[in-house]
Image 1 (cartoon, one colour):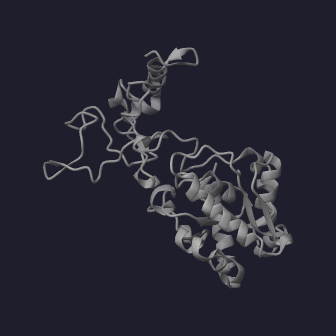
Image 2 (cartoon, helix red, strand yellow):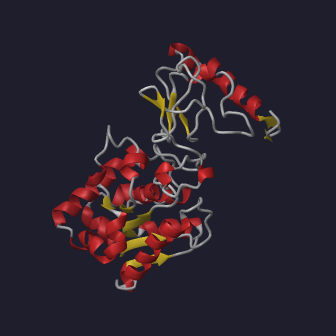
Length: 308
């Protein structure tokens, strides 16, 4: 209650949101059963604001509506579970720590065993970077054919990093930097006029222009599998080369229901990349013409479905 922001307490802010929701005719129609409330925090009921759970009041309102970005924590909604929010996971009646996911405080290195705090990114639909949106009319009107798309994009590969200026969670910096450094060593072997390679933050318009001039965009994971850079690439009409483990399982929106990500994404396991990154990029360099044409067409088709 004492956590203040926007001039009011956390609970007061939640009540304002839920009041507006309950008053909506769309909610009243089916009590929210035909709408989704997308929550970016991984602990729907136990993410602490001080000692409070994130939704300490009126959770039953969200019963039919909630979709979690991270579903690695059991969802406890009022009236749906017999036990307290912090009840340990039980298997055959016995407390089992095997499937328990805990907060970052234990400093478990693999991201898939770490509870994730609220993130500034979401899965889908993803809001396009406003600087990249400026390029959308050109992409839609002049790059629907493969040959036109290629002519507009002189760079074969694009990578824009953040250097060391990023607050990775515990245990993640070293692993990410190994992946990034492997790219830089590989980039030294490529014709410099065919790559856009920068390891620092760029001004938004410069960043957007670089991606809009590139055919393949290198997407290296950060401290968790869902990356805004993946959606930046889609928005810019650039085929993502996804270098990370776990994106399909944890970060790819609608993966099991709607889209074949292989149709518009090249995926490289981290183990392959770390052993020999140049060979991992060979598929992009030597891709048969008909396959590239299919990837380009799939990319153009999927962009409006995963972006807004």
